[in-house]
Amino acid sequence: MFCPGISLDQNGKLVVTGGTDQSRTSIYNTSDDTWYKAAAMNIDRGYQATSTLSDGRIFVIGGSFSGGVGGGSEGETGTARGKDGEVYDPVKNEWIRIFGAQVSPMLTNDDRNHRQDNHGWIFSWTNGSVFQAGPSKAMNWYGTSGNGTTNSAGSRTGDGDAMCGNAVMYDQGKILTFGGSIWYEEKPATTNAAIIMIDKPNQPPTVEKAGDGMNYKRTFHSSVVLPDGSVFVNGGQDVGLPFNESGAHLTPERFVPGENGGKWIKQQKNSIVRVYHSLSLLLQDGTVFTGGGGLCGDCYANHFDGQIYTPPYLLNEDGSPKTRPVISTVSPSEVRPGDTVEVTTEGDVDETASIIRYGSATHTVDTDQRRISVKLQKGDTNKYKFQIPAEAGIAQPGYYMLFILKDGVPSHSVNVRVAA
Image (cartoon, rainbow, N blue to C red; front, side, top):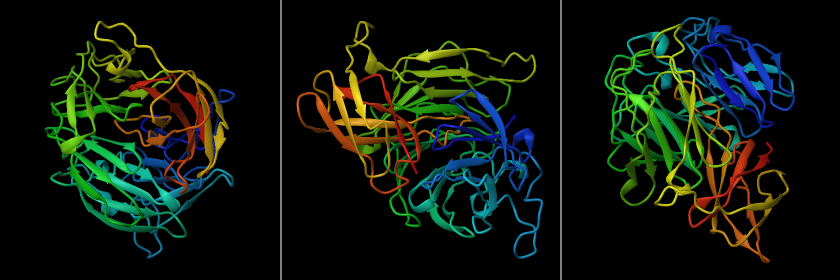
């Protein structure tokens, strides 16, 4: 399953597609620790992008790293097509090609054809739509009904192709993009950063610069959205060189939204290089797991270890842990769009809480993580309630970590599942 696409479905199962397995689909059931084989895709793919849709199906596009460049079969017009979109129906256990969701508008200008459709930054949205924010400088809307659709969404402001950069939905409809390079490897990275704001499908997004850009040029980095809405950025290097650590950055940084497009703040210096094949994932206690790197036989760039990053919101100035708010009960724990969730806490908490979808990271891409800020309405003593966004797809189906905050300090999370 090397070089696959991955997505967590609405039931928390991990759906792994393609890579060295070409067209195969393997599903990991997190409830009983079991792998099983599902229906194969119609196209061999590797380094493709996948995302769980508002109705629970899974969309996939791109992936020329495996199976050759192009679709390998005839399209509706009788001409060879690229690795256009297809969708997986987990109820019927079948993949259906949607020729109208075309990969060609999202290609980059990488000098290697098999790289041009790798690691797309895609975000499922309302009414079965998918927004593609990069890494091509061109952005697009995809529709997944019927035969599918493709509509241009313009270009990111002041940015070119950004292969192996990052994109994170840090709040409802707000996507932070940053770093990357015009080619997958061998070209300098950038500090470029933008905020893309989406609303209705097929409508042009608003794009603005995210502060003055990162402090360091980064490619092959990873990132995690945190409960307070900031984004932690870890690792990366000046020039993308797989299995090579020259120009690596040990100092992480954190994007904090705010006036003038937000600001980028350097964090405590790390001690281990995290570049190609490394990852970062949010944990249930509000810390971040970072690990890996390399996977190149016995080369020096291998890092078979992990670390825990503790964000500053958990620490006092002297380094001691801050007192954290506590969630006592959450009801119900399984909801649908528009439902109300009731929360009991130990003491008063901030008005704004966060639900953050569990992530699944591969090669700088985590299309599963998503944060939505929710407003808590206070009722009786220590009792609050909030509403899941009413329009299906804003809260992408799946499992979320609910964090409450007190003076910006997050609780340990409690799971809430949003059904399709």
